[in-house]
Image (cartoon, rainbow, N blue to C red; front, side, top):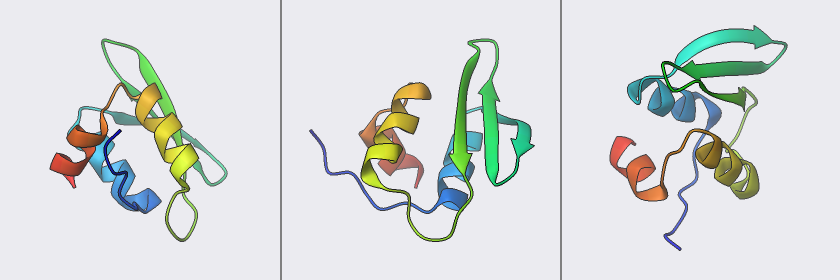
Length: 74
């Protein structure tokens, strides 16, 4: 498995937007992003600090994004 970089919520949201995701809605501190026409939906908690590795892995799976693609877009 490739090395997983530390990423803030704001930076991850920008990466997902570069990949074609658009903000669908926001509930509290969580931003829900959707990619059409595939219908991929994921949420990003907009908290301070870096996103935990387990949560980042889960978000990448939901977004169908590999670690290598994430690194390229950072």
